[in-house]
Length: 221
Image (cartoon, rainbow, N blue to C red; front, side, top):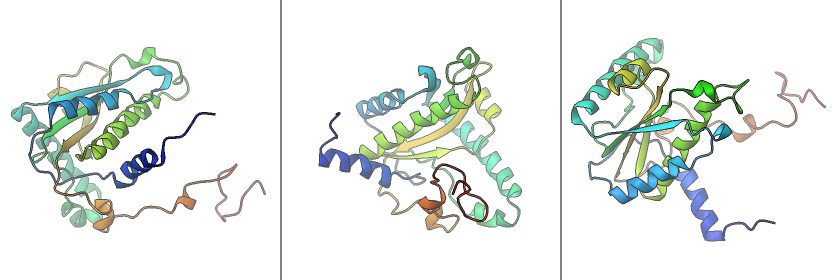
């Protein structure tokens, strides 16, 4: 049988998982190039359905482009606020991104030409997105292990961002990732701290054999 990691190694993996946070507050200290290279390589070693590796990563180093991306996010932030109705004011008080403070901006995208990949996607084409999400999670956990914060920004119109990055037809931006040094990590997810939402109990998310009936009884019993 395959041997597990040592106790300290296992503890480090679980610590990265439990202490990972969606960060919004950064300090502008540059990220060491060697560390950034390790993080990108960690993302690139994510699992992907059919080994299609659909992720494409764009590092944004142009201040002009960063400002344009921030403007795109701000436009959608206002539209999102309006769509929330009664929760509009509460949403507008939230800090939803750290794009102007973080050291690095990375845009994670789906590649073009994905339709040629059929393995694992014939009935579930969205598995390309699932694969990109795995790459983002790899990057996130590696960043936490390196003592760096990362925030996932999804409040944008994909067409706007694709145009700004001159993406080819068929490619699609998935996330604007804020990456950089932080003074500290949140003790709990920021949205939980702000009272926006709380983590669901594990028992509400794990079922056995069948989906539970509305009454809460096991339909297979």
